[in-house]
Each structure stands twice: as C-alpha cells, then as structure tokens.
Image 1 (cartoon, rainbow, N blue to C red):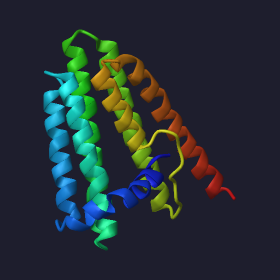
Image 2: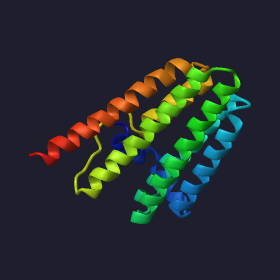
Image 3: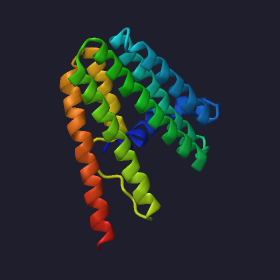
Image 4: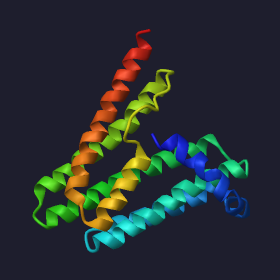
Length: 188
C-alpha cells in the first residue's frame, strides 16, 4: 500500500541529499541490513533501543532506492538484492521479538511474532510466484513499509502484543487479497 507511494513521495525532498551520495545504492542496502541485524541483536536486551535501530535501518532502505533513481543507478540486481535482504531482515526482526517475548514467558506473544513472520514471507512469496506466472501482484494492505512502521511503533511504545495481533491478522488478510487477485487475473 505504502511501498509504491512512499519512495517516490520522498524522492523530491530527499533528491538534493541523494544526489550528493556517490555510493553505489547496493552499499546503502547492505549497510541498512547490518543496522537491522544489530537491531535484532539488541531487541532481546533493550526493546526500545532496538526499535530506534529498526527505524535507522529502514531509513537506509528508503534512501537506497532514492539514490538509485536520482543518480540513474537502478539495476535489476539492486532490486533483487534489496528484496532478499528485506526477507532476511524480516526474519531477524520477528525472530528477535519472539525471543524477547518468550524470554519474558509470553509464549502467545512469541507465537504472534512467528505467525506474522510467516505472513510476511507469504506476502513476498505470493508476489514472486505471481510474477513467475507473468502477472503483477502488488495489492494488499500490509506490505513491508506498513510492517516496519508498526514494528517501530510497537517496540518504542511497548505495545507489542496489540500491534502483533494487528500485524498477524493484516499480513494474512494481505496474503488472501493477493491469492484472490491472482485467481481473478488468471481466470479472466
């Protein structure tokens, strides 16, 4: 939902900064991934600091695309690398939150985090599978930007359980939306 709009919405205000960044956008992608890995390592020990690190890592994730577009450095490999590292980031973050919650004895919360991770992976998988069949599949209410915004909110405010319930439900609704979309498109 936000994916298509957020990057291009931020292009204009961040273009002057992006033009000055002469790094390969893939370096920004990898740097953001490492910040996210650090966030995942911090979360079990300091949930709020982990949330701020998620926010920092996500800024790299936004900036890499803007730098690529503004400096005419977009590549198919860059898009592929970004997608792969996003999946690793999702795994590290949701596993880390599950670990944090399980350590507090909240096994239901840990299950919510793992269930949301499954939904996040299925959102990505349904899109990739649809594209493998030659169809576009970018529909749904809970793509990665929404998940990251909610994760930052949940970790910084401490409202993990209510937000994880929302994310669990909405990620799987998004999977259903995508399955329905592909079914409709393939049966025209």
